[in-house]
Image 1 (cartoon, rainbow, N blue to C red):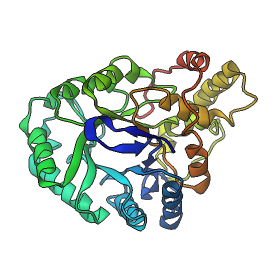
Image 2: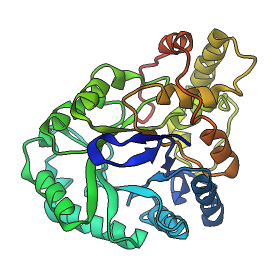
Image 3: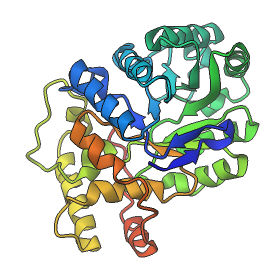
Image 4: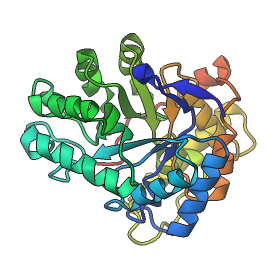
Length: 323
């Protein structure tokens, strides 16, 4: 497993991290605590030492599982978590004041709750789970981040950028008051490359690339007949004719790359993210041993050839399935 620097934090993290939303038992249906722990343990055994979780993932379920796995591993894993918006609205809405989303005392109390769930004294990275650029001059987040670092409750701080809105983080990056950003980046959404990634490189900000498979689209295993469990959030994400749209777009990628089928696509999707110099870590969800095994193989293979990247750049797809 190769490692990269997480911006100016001084952390060296595995370039493939572990996205822990799917093990929460909420919204992603089908993963038990036992199977989730097996996947977490396998990921750590295979060299993954960066895990991204959140207080909102199953109301602490994900954090508790992550904490257990990290303790079993002797603490040799960097853990990132997130403060959920107080109003529980994702993404942050323009016109909504920070006092309704991230008041100072709430950020501090949420961090304490996360630390209890994780059974840790300090988290390596604390993040705001949404961001509204209208808050840039407000004191609440600045004071909270400063006090979390001073108190030793968080070693580094950052934000998770709203879905498909990478440019909304440019101004906060330029303040020098955060250490990392988490952003959607994959073959379909390549928009961070234009402005966000250059800003992160300029200011030495760590980049955590989330949703590398577009919630499963880029695994090549979704078609018009795919059925998700009742209550699974993907029933909304892939509602209507979206599954067919995905299948058509994936088929076009497979054809353009000259692949026999889509079996190699997950590896290509991961390596696409890792080919961006600005990316510190990519955090796919992994709820099974097979997912862990498949994902870790992308590390160490190096960037995709430029001719492959040129083909993939033609497959940007500007849409928002979260809406």
